[in-house]
Length: 64
Image 1 (tube, rainbow, N blue to C red):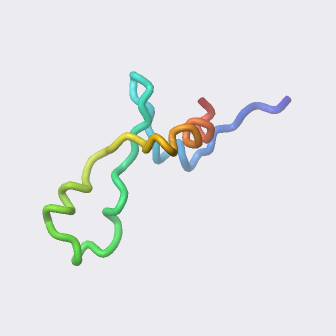
Image 2: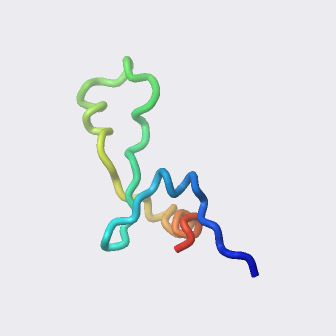
Image 3: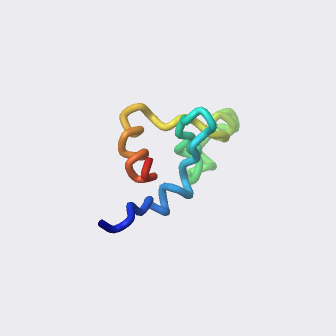
């Protein structure tokens, strides 16, 4: 049986914390920055936990 390979693209985008949570960059910051207010731009910085609906799929991609 071949080895299980993790999805390298997902590995670069998602980090697993010490407690096992999946953390990723907040979505919506890359495009149309002149339309967004400064308040919205600040709100979108930082990391957030992966949505509950996506957790199972992301864990499978990471090989966990």
